[in-house]
Length: 210
Image (cartoon, rainbow, N blue to C red; front, side, top):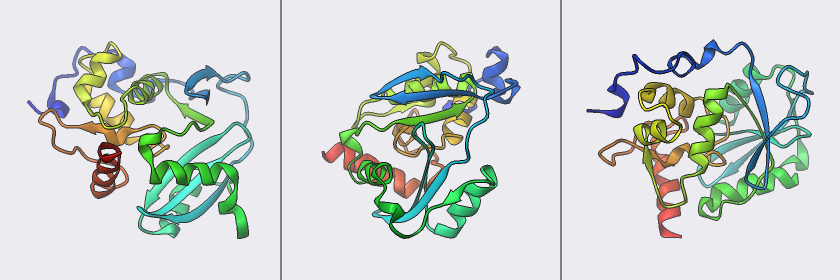
């Protein structure tokens, strides 16, 4: 049976619909670990800054706050990436000129080009508690390895929440830094990827050949 078609009837309420949580929680991740943000989930946050550049996989948008990188988007059209991000963060400020030489942006670009190196990046991760459990599990898949939605569901202790795991992967705002590209179908075929299946294939090939 396709992993996405597995029954989720007995999954916890939050897993069946991660939107049931009343507020987004926030983690600050540094040096590979997740630490609760000191000011809590409901505290106001300054609008992020972002830069758009080109990489070997096409256009890339990197956004960051004082806490770390909060978004890495990949696509074909820089303007489309900008619109998508500004729809989510209307107050976000685009940095021009030499912004792509920002140290965090340069490190994000390095991660795209060499995903197997798992460069440590400070990340500001915002999501529901269930999404963050899934994203932690994704971070546990080593470069060159893959896992299915069902395997991730079992790893987080919610074996019937396969569809919710798939939704959490699709909601991941941090391409490659949270490696949802390492998720495949149970038969090993490439599953869908928010940033395009061909980019997913390229990332996996880079990791496996490293």
